[in-house]
Picture (cartoon, rainbow, N blue to C red):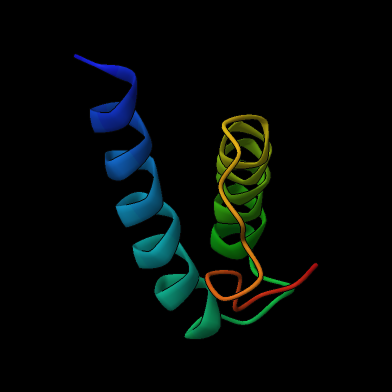
Length: 60
């Protein structure tokens, strides 16, 4: 898999994950587990040079 493909997939996962997070209670265990993945994806995308200004709906 190329770097561009990996970034594309990560952007899609980041977006989808945020949609799920917005539907959950912030205090739930599910939300907390999703937030861990959210942070991982956010770090990866930032390191990859992706501008998250428009993509980040959670902004935590």
